[in-house]
Length: 106
Image (cartoon, rainbow, N blue to C red; front, side, top):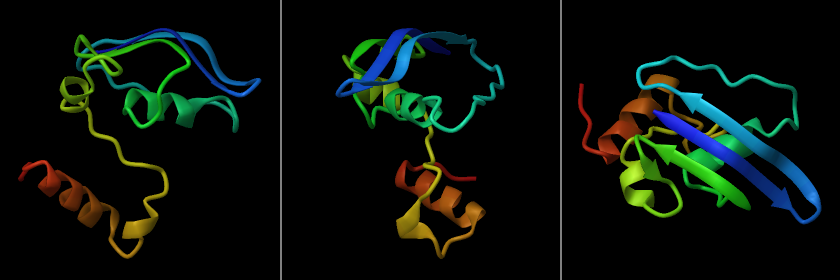
């Protein structure tokens, strides 16, 4: 389950994400759509623990990504939109590579 409450991310005076509230139940397929500059990538990077929020909370399976990042990250897979250092790999090869880093087989 993903639980986001009052999530805000600012870059100086620019507000990239403004008080986002979102619940995605366990097992639910969810699409995150919006125009360029809407804050989708910023939100996903906060969920993945790559960026710190300015304010608000993000929980993955009940674990706060800021206060308990290791437990939260253990419940998430994240592939960036542009994995430049792996551009010679196919999509499937990249997924197998990342899975292997976490000891996931199959």
